[in-house]
Structures are given as C-alpha cells and as structure tokens.
Length: 439
Image 1: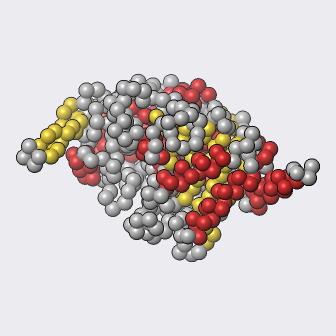
Image 2: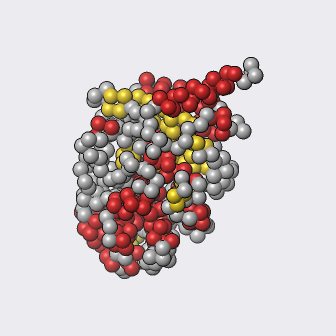
Image 3: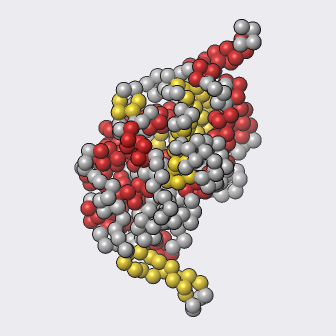
C-alpha cells in the first residue's frame, strides 16, 4: 500500500488537472487516471516539462496536447500564450487553424457517400465535375537550348478517379510544392495558388474553383505517382455536387454535430475570435514572416484540404471515433470495414513515391497512404515509435494527430507554429506517448 501511494497521488493529481481545465463534458472523452488504462502519470509529465521549456525559450507561442487511451482522456494541458499580442494564456478549448487536418474529415465524409451507393471509388472525377473530362498532363522534357528542363502538354492516359483523389494519385499538385512550372502558372492565374500566403485556395467560389482547376494541366499521369495535392479540395466539391449542400453544412450535419464537435467549422464567429490561437509574427527558427489564413469571414469556398478550424477536444473525438471503428458514444458515422479500407495501404508497389508520405510528414520512411490518412506498414522501418496499422495526418499551421489501434491510443497536438520545427514536435510527441505506456 505504501509503495502504491505516490502513484495514486499522481493519478488523482492528473484527474484533478483535467477537471480544473473547465472543459465541457460534451466536448471531452471520459476522464480517467493514466494508471487505470496502463499509462504512467509521471512519464506523461515529460510532455509538460518539454512543452513548458519550448514556450519559455520562445520556440513555441503556445500549444494544447491531449492524449487518450482505451477511450479515456488521460492528459489535457495547455501551454504558453493564445495571442502574444494580448498576452492571453492558451486554454484547452482554444481554437486553431488546422489546415490539412481538414483532409481526413472530408475524406471520411466522401466515404459516407460511397457507403450510400451515391459514389464509387472507381468513378472518374468527371462524372461529378465535368470540367475534369479529358485532362492534359504537363510532362518534363529536356530543353537543349537552356540545357535544362521544360514542360509540354500531353493527353492524360486516363482520367483520375475518386480513389485517386482519396490517395493523392490524381495528378493534381499544390502550387506551393510543385516544381512543374506549367502547373504552378495555371494555379496562380486561376487564383488557387497565392504566392503571398501558403495553402489558401478559399477565394474562388466552389463553382469557380472546379472550373479553373479542371482546366489546369495535371502534374502527373493519373494513378501513377503519389503527390500531395489539392485532391481533397476536389473531394469537397464532389460532396457538394452529389448532396446539393455546401461542404461545411454537410460536415456539420453528418460529422460535427453527431460527434459533438461544436467548435469545428470553416470560419470563426466574432464572439469566438478571442479564443483563436495566433502564431509568432516571425518563425523563431527561420526569421520568416508567418502568415496564416484569415478565418474571421466566411470563405468563397470551404476548402476541404486546408480550411477548417477546430479545438484539440473536438478533433480528439473524431480521432477516437475512427480508432473505434467509425463510432463514438453509440453514434456511428461510418462502418468498421470502411475505416479499415481507409487505413489500409492504397499505394502498393505500382505507385511511384518520389517523396514518400512518411518522409513528407515525419521525415522517415515506413509509411504508405490510404484513403485520407498516412498509414504505417509495419512495426519497424519508420524511425519513430508506433505500430503497424496506425494512421495519422498533420496541418501546415502546426497541428498533428495520430491513432494507434494496437496500443488503443490517440493523441492531438495543436499549435500555430508553421515553421520547419513542426516535424520535430510530431516525432517528439509520438515518443512521449509511447514511453508513457506501461501495461
């Protein structure tokens, strides 16, 4: 009994801290002590010590970290400042621009339509968006005049499919990432890529975006190369075409409301703007100015690839629902076989990966891509903790989540720090959660 007393005190302290956070139960998972689900309070405290140090040394403006195991919330802490301009402290229910963490939720919504028979994975995109009919592809060609590479247009060998959109093999690209000059120029002229601010394709209306993007050349032959892209923005347009609803409205009705994600959407009301986390004006590592999207107004289109705002608690509920096979608290959003399909390898050996999904997200091999998620292929190879079958994604603004079915864990990191250090924090968080597992 005496030897167990320190652990018991730590457990009670952890639970008390969670309760003191003032977090509405409708937004949270049930709270439990770490020890009750096979984790160590003392070892989880390494997260707190490290994040406090990062904030104190001004490498991070602020952060929220949440960890769950076996469906129970065991760690929820806020660090640093919400807004360094007002010196407001970060709160566990602060709002964050989640950028590409919008993608898995939109892919889940599209799979709802697959389950209903309204969409099939083998369908060509042009079945729903006619502007994608008979696409052209910008391919590299040796330029003897300049002793370099130029690009020319050739007809696509086939049209991209819904599966191609979900696994990023559609031939689409990001203007911020591609080196294909014809594609970058076309995206710039279409207003889909803005050199002044990264990953903001929200200005055109849905109809304008589809028409302009469909006329732009593809960067790869569809179904041949994994290239991170605007594919999920197009998924959002397909959802709108099939349902007749704006993307945000469909997500609100079919995902956010059922999962009680009451703070997730594509714009922040004036009343909630004081809860919005802000970055440093300049990135501490590079000195570059930090410019994040303006979420104070309704956008021209609900960018399925990068436009949502959420809280750590809201996103943890989505993560837990997917970890639990597509349901949470008795509410099912998709079936268990659909989750399994989404979190399986969809690249195989036939899809080229000049930049592998794992290298892009974590700086390590050992991962493939499913239908909306990075997925781990085995316990080894990857230079980070994790298990075969885990799935995850992250956001440009500094957000990150993962779910590990074998360990029954899911975790969310929320920051607004878009510099190169965000990859370091992703790897760090995985190590901290893994080392706290003691059962």
